[in-house]
Length: 166
View 1: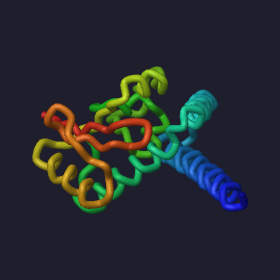
View 2: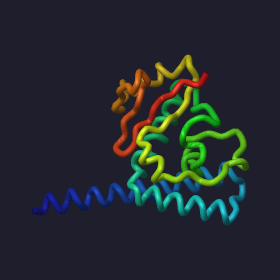
View 3: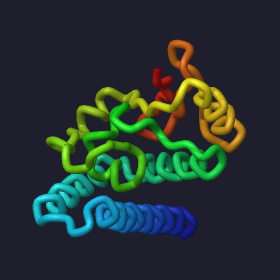
View 4: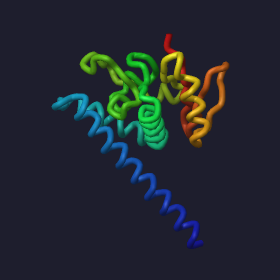
């Protein structure tokens, strides 16, 4: 009995820590993107974060952020700006998952329930490095397979397709 209770408590503490980390990293990233974020931007980010937490996507986003940072540190490349499914999410932009050339042109925030229904979300890398990144993911503990011949990273709620930018 005690061990079941302890496991549940540990999971709750772990989830709370991940949520706090996501909120902190997002707020930090928004302050880097917008020198002084407006009340509208702050409200949009807060609502989007609440929605992400409600949909239980916080762990996947943190893992994806870590993956992109690791790829950047090892290979010196980032996802291609303006491509992919994360470019309309202020949270994803703040975390560095999505990239845009002009932050002021970000339109209506993304509907996360639509992305969750889509299930497979894409991130674009250049043609010459994409397969190397997929191999890197395989060798570093990520669950990688292929979908229609393209590498895909399987997370708990979403799948991230590593697309080739042309």
